[in-house]
Length: 204
Image 1 (cartoon, rainbow, N blue to C red):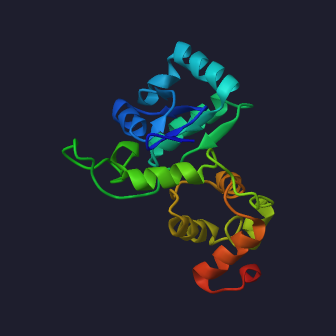
Image 2 (cartoon, rainbow, N blue to C red):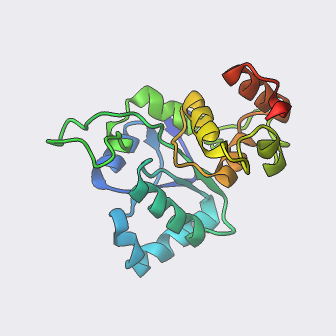
């Protein structure tokens, strides 16, 4: 739901730091909780709060696309097992946040540095706003058939596919299946891969 140019969510949103929270607040009317980076690992009270709110309202995990962000995302995903969870994936955009003197270790923009249109697009693609009625039906076997999983060159091929979709390169095959099922139908997936490299999808 849009309200005053912002998107209203019933789900809580979990991000990493103060500046991520500020950026998300410029786009969302929602309860936003920050993990304080890896601080969430030892903050039992905050873990309980996030779990309790996620059980009642659902949650959107909005961490960065670097190694630390994916590590925190994995921790939160385990913490919220059984809850309604959506993953907002930040695309791999290289650059430097304005407030920082130098780029991050991996040179990628995080939530705070991502332009609002890209952040909004990532939110829409998470499935939390509305899933296309025709989406779904994709399995891990489809990724194998398309050469995106389980083949000698699958990692490189999947990385190229993720780049085409504007998704982070660290996304695993299992996470990709879950995300695709919120975005496209099986037939559309085959068309996307075929269009990526001009091959017949089942030939790999």
